[in-house]
Amino acid sequence: MSAAQQMGVLGRPVRVRFAPSPTGRLHVGNARTALLNWLFARQQGGRFVLRLDDTDLARSEASLEGGIAADLAWLGLTPDEGPYIEGPEAGGPFGPYRQSERVRLYQAAAERLREAGLAYPCYCTDEELARERAAALAKGKPPRYSGRCAHLTEAERAVLERQGRAASLRFRAGSGRVAFEDIIRGTVEFEAGLIGDFVLLRSSGLPAYNFATVVDDAAMSISHVIRGEDHLANTARQLLLYRALNAEPPRFAHHSLLVAPGGVKLSKRSGDLDIGSLKGRFLPQAVVGYLAGIGGALGGGLEPLPVAEIIQRFDLARAGKSAAVFDEARLASLNAAWLRALGTDELTAVVSEHLEAAGYPLAGREGEWRRELAEALRPNLRTLDEIATLGAIFLEDVPPKDDWAREVLSAPEARETLTLCAAEVERGAGYAEAAAALKARGISGKRLFAPLRAALTGRHSGPELERVFALLGRQVVLRRLQAALAEGN
Image (cartoon, rainbow, N blue to C red; front, side, top):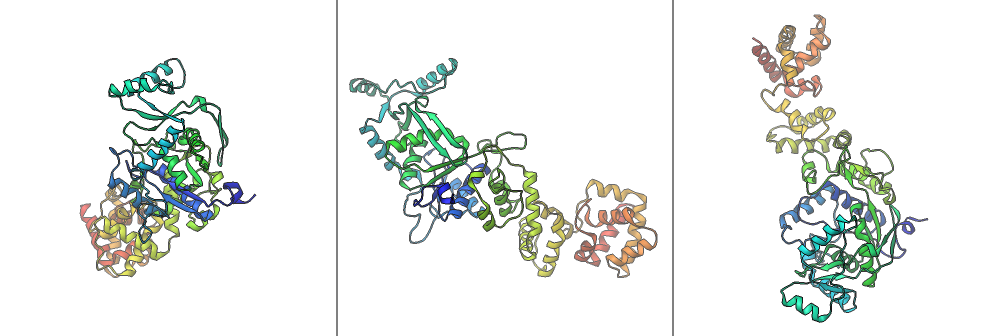
């Protein structure tokens, strides 16, 4: 069976969408959803649409909207259509792409359903609905609307309106079986009678999530809806709406949610992890590779793959039913592998950018020195924030010393090692010559290397001493050796 036969209806162009709410930063879970949509669109030669669910006017912010777009751009997930597409066909052929600008479309669709007898005004207050839910839960029943406004007469409605009650508009869910084939989960079934009549338009005239989503997905010819399993229950309501609107539903794929290593669900509202928190620590290609790989969609382990190969390996059906564990330690390992795989010029650019952002001016440092610095740091780097920490070894007059370094330098035998090494450096010796001279005097192994590393770098681990000598230069090496000796007096 071909990929097209497996994934969609033959002859229908592949169009997917990512529709975040601009009420917070882009969470890693939502970023994974965006990535799965983007990968599927690129693999199938389709279109990736960015649509903003901004009808929560009280919580939506333009700055957060821009932040989501910037985070997607940082990940390389460029939309083919959306509010930030510029040029002669700004946005795209199915705009506008902000739901706040599409309210008339929802109201018109709702009116069609009302005229067809498929929707009715509901005058229940929030307090009355809350009491209904509490009563149902107290009896051990699933909370759903009782339908108390479903059969009101015109006279009864007029009385409620004279009382000042504002009406929402509810959809008649009816009864029967709602079933669909999920690309990841197989056959999924719901009973419409267990859903209850649900809100299409709030009393404010703004649409409820499920209604706006269906109207937009149908109007924008979305062929596949790829989203988290927390939306699985919404699918039954949405399929009922597709049927009522005489619209062809998309194919659905509900992937697993992200959890922390202990199994705790990552939450956008709790602010566990957003893409902005990863930017200063990880390469975008590492984040993309990690989010694509967890859950099994790439069918193998985590390795630094170019995006073209990720697209080729990607299999939506393998995206996973079980919870996907987001483990920063594994992401750091993949990031380290990417840092090892970068070419020298690429790594030099990354190192220079992060050092300058940390306040280390590199003006006057020649290109070759920067390249040598990048290569010196490479073996010890796992995350990008370590660049500034290790770079301090070479860019501060006297780098800070950790507890290990202070303990090593306090040992009596360290003084002999540093004194002899300083004398060799004063005579013009480099690292290899100085080490050979001390070994000839019986100073080797830990007794040789530990005091030198402590005096020159201040850290238990870090770049190779030979590279440290070369990058610091003879005068700085000598000054640090003498400073360490002076501190020990």
